[in-house]
Structure formats: C-alpha cells, structure tokens
Image (tube, rainbow, N blue to C red; front, side):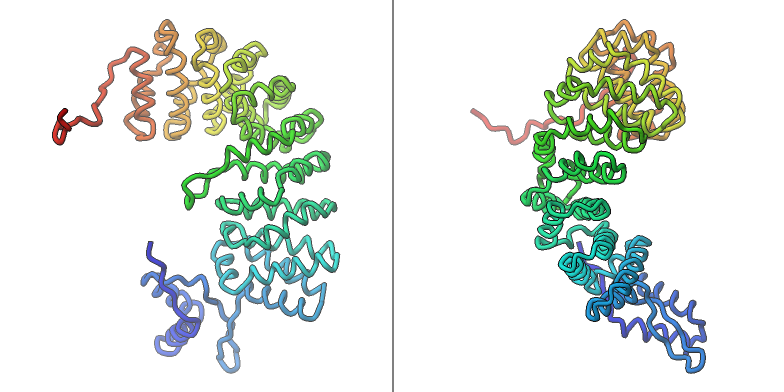
Length: 468
C-alpha cells in the first residue's frame, strides 16, 4: 500500500497566504480551499497545523492549534514543575484527542507519546495522584486507535503501576490505558501477558468488586485479550489468553460480582465477559456448575425491560450452549421461555433478535428433544417475526436461517410448522438480498424440503492428471 504524500508546514502556509492575497479570500475560505487542493492530490495533512488566527492590525497569520497548544502547555509545565498548569494541559489535551482521529494523528506527529510518557513517569515519581490520573487519561485518549505507538517501556510501566498502585481513580485509568493499548495490537497484548498483567486484572476485579466503574473497565480490558482483531499477524493467542484468564478463577470472581450486583450495566458487562471466556467445552459446564445459569436466567427475568441485559444474556446462553449437557440444562431451567419473551419484548431491536435467534439455534443443534421444546415454547414464531421485522439486517437473517435449519435437521416433522409460519418466503428473500446469507439460506430451504438450486462451485477439467 502506497504511503500518502506529505508536505511541509511552510508549503501549506504559503498556499493559504496566496489564496488570501491573490484571490482575496477570507481566512476561512483560504484554509478550506488549501485543504481541498491538497486532499485532492492525495496529501496527508494530519501532521500539519491547519488553523490560524489573524492579527487584526497587521494581518499577520499565526498558527493556532489546540492540540499543539496543549502539548506546549504540558512541555512547559514539566520544565517548570508547575503542577496546576500540567493538569490543565493534560485535561485540554484529552479533550482534543477525544474529538477526532485527525487530532490524535497530529499529536503523534508532534511527539505526544514521548511527552505523555515523561508526564506519567514524572507524576509517578512525585507521587502526585491527581496529575498521574490525568496523565494516564490523556495517554488513553491519545492511544485510541493507534495502540501500536505504545512501546515496551510504556507497557512495563503500566504493568508495574497495576501491581503497585491501589487508589481507585488510578486503578481505573491504568486498566483503561492497558485496554486501549491492546486494541488491534496483538504484540502489545502478548507483551502485557508476558509482564504478568492477567492475574492482576482478575485480582482487580475481586479487590474492587464494589466499584462499578472499575469492574466495567476491567471486564472490557480482559475481553480485549481474547480478541483476534490484529490483521498484521497471521495468528493471535486469543484462545490461550482466555485460558490464562480462566485459570485465575475468573469465573468465580465474575459470578461472585453478578450474584451481588444491583447495577444492570455492570451485570451486562459481566455477562458478555463470561461469554468471551466460554471457549472450551468444559468451561461452559463450569459456568453452569458454579450457579451461573441460574443467575443469568434470574437476571433476565428480573430485567425484562432492559435491552442490554436481553442481548447479553442471550449472547452468554448462545456461548455456553456449545456444550450439549448445558443445552439440556438451559431447557430444563426454563431458559427457552425467557429467550422467546426477550425477543418478543425487544422485537424491534436487531441485536436482541440476532442473539436470540443464535441462542435458539445453538440450543437446537444436535438435540431433537430441544428442538421440540423450542417449537412448543413459541421459538418458531419468534424467529420468523425477527426475520420479518429486520429484513435488511444480515446478522438477524443469518442466525434465523441457521436456527430454522437446526430445528428441522433431525426433526423433519417440524417442517410443516415452520413453513406454515411463513418462513419459506422470508428465507428466499434473505437468499436473494444478502450474499452473506446465501449458503445458510440454501441449507435451510433444502432441509425444509423446499425447491432450491444447488450449484456446483467447481468442476475439474481432467487436464494435468498424473497417470499411474
């Protein structure tokens, strides 16, 4: 991939001045025209200051960029050991970085990483809690979307802080910085793991179980270690990281938090974290054996009006239903009725519809008795309704087709019930409209006994055969 073109600050300044002097544009028009010219030529302007202030008396232009101003403030405050100025500079910098990716890229081109690391180190050594918290927050804002800028020294620093510091505001910001540095960066994830952060993240959950903010942030951070989102590496270690987290008794800690949790948002984060960690057959059973199934079904029953709870509980049920024994446990515990009720209550929410269909499909897989139970619980009607309400949502259509297929794959007597509910026309629409659904839709139509054209994707020519 070709690198974008770049120009100097002087070149951009000259074009702005020319627009004002030769073409009599006002300042705003001159800047916008210069931007448009260079962007048309494929020039990357993220490293330049493209805002100015004009002296009303002399007409002289001066650079004005809030990101650069904040960085200068941080630099001066560190040199002069002005703690109040440092705090303001860090807060201003965080605000600007949160506004746009362009601001973060510009900050990177101006040496922000090195400066922020210096600020973190300085405040850590000075034991200044407020400014260290602000430094870590600024670091997180800056690294968002560009975690690869974090180097080994920064990773070691954050790991050390997580192990040593105990103040809540610091712990929350440390965990957030770790999370942001790991997004789409497998190398950073593995370096953090090598520095022993996983046991300390799980310990943080346990030690701060009463702090909703820290629990949510730590759940987010643990999940990032199970992501496979870095396209620059052939293979990640998401599965290995999940096993390491579980080995630290993460299930026990998370379920302990859920059992006593009164905050719906926190409970939702715990649910989705459990679902990310249920990566092995025995893990699914462990969650049930530790009382997790009973807890999440009660959570769904107690918070039927919460869209987020409905989505995340269905996501967790889908994950743990990968274990055949757990499928039966979900049915026996009355889970099917709660899933169908959630899909009905939140029928207009595509994410609930998708995860509800996925959960039913997972419970139905390889289990004829479960398929009959799903039909009896109104699952077919809920799935068909989801397809009707969300015809343009690929995720809903895919999971619905898969669920319907699973319901009849070993129970052909259910075909008439599903067809009478109007599923065939909906499946055909999904097949014709969405390429992602083509194979699943064909499989569903085939198993329902409907006419379907199956194409041979590849036919050998017989040429070049080796003769023996």
